[in-house]
Length: 176
Image (tube, rainbow, N blue to C red; front, side, top):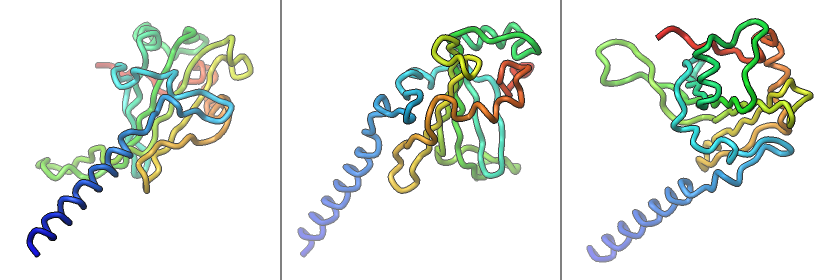
């Protein structure tokens, strides 16, 4: 009897591990917003430099940029009338939030990944949106897999027209 229970426990643990591997094994490089940007265009985003953080009800976001965009930020962009160069890319990493149980004061920290949103500037590819293209990938809470949200590279452009004078970028680079 003990042997059967041990085998059942080991089997259950093995299946759980395999399920976890299946989630971790998603090939993100094949993800693409229909008629839009592909995830593979943002390879290495995990190592990009931090621009700023933002918070919306229930979520925290880290905004990071590639070296091309960071150089522009450090020169003072976004600024009225000045444009980010082609090749500028930004990622918004969004997490749900939770209280930090170890902190001696009330502080919220990232919890589960909710979405990854990317923005890229390429005037040749995206002339109708002033060079900017957008992609968002949401985490499926049931599977943990990323799924594209929306269609086309222009998805997200309407929202960003509110900051057209800042070359369609909301987030400034704060003092350090």
